[in-house]
Amino acid sequence: MPGMSEALKAALTDKSAGVAEMLQHLLPEVAETESRLFDAMRYSTMNGGKRLRPFLVLTTAEMFHVAPSSALRAAAAVEMIHCYSLVHDDLPAMDNDDLRRGKPTCHRQFDEATAILAGDGLLTRAFEVLAHPATHSDPAVRSQLVLDLAQAAGPHGMVGGQMVDMLAERDDAVRAGLDVAAITRMHQMKTGRMIAFSCMAGATLGKAPAQLRQALQAYAHDLGLCFQIVDDLLDVEGSADEMGKTIGKDQAAGKITFVSLLGLERARDQARLLAGQAVQHLKPFDAEADLLRDVAAYVLDRRS
Image 1: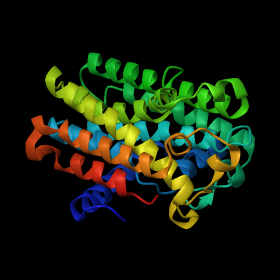
Image 2: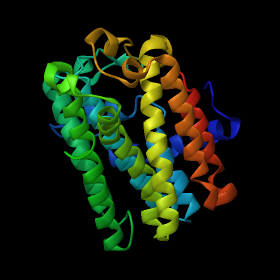
Image 3: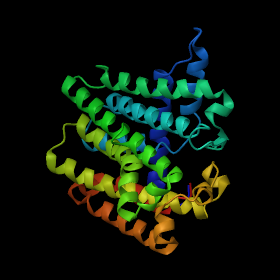
Image 4: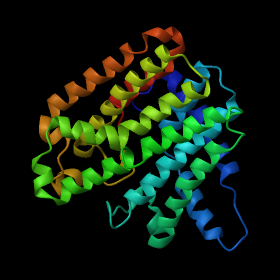
């Protein structure tokens, strides 16, 4: 993968395999009448992807010596939430995309109603997994994970950010009010808070001290914004083959993005600044956070 260190490539491959195995376990094939629903849920989670969010869960969990089985369950829950959001984003009522990760989107492979239910199933299954005693022996930790994920994914997080994004596309008054600060807030909601949860979940599972949690929170904040700016750059400069999805849709729809507000060069400069700041926040962890430093470099240079 372009822009990825060998250490990160090996770790991502290893951790992705573990997450895939856990997803297979948590989303088994069923013989009952609702098997089509499970087929759609599995199709939407087993079709590749970088697994960046679960990777962040697993990497931070290792930094705090969390049991691998606990970390894998939390990582799988995060991936279920992420994949549900992609299934719903791709629907005709939202982005109306035909491709996801180089394959037909869920509603194209199955049908629109099944895709809606598959997203609903992944969303609710994620919270069931986190709340289960197998995820952590301490109910307070499980409750904190459920609360944090609900806040990251809900109306003040990912879903709310998607609503603002939709309004900005459809409502001239909303679009006119979107400056850099407003776009930053929208993407913090839409993308940043789920990345932040992914970074913080390992610390929550490991009952990390407040100082280290704050350092990870700051890292996640800058990483999430860098990720979104690069996404905006790739929508203009990326390749459909590398991205595995349609590109140029933001520009065609007249959406307000970091690139439309800042221009290509200033957007690139801002992404570089954020990646550098993210790395600086990791100083308290020394070599333990080397993979997280590699993630920041990869997010900045990625092509998909």
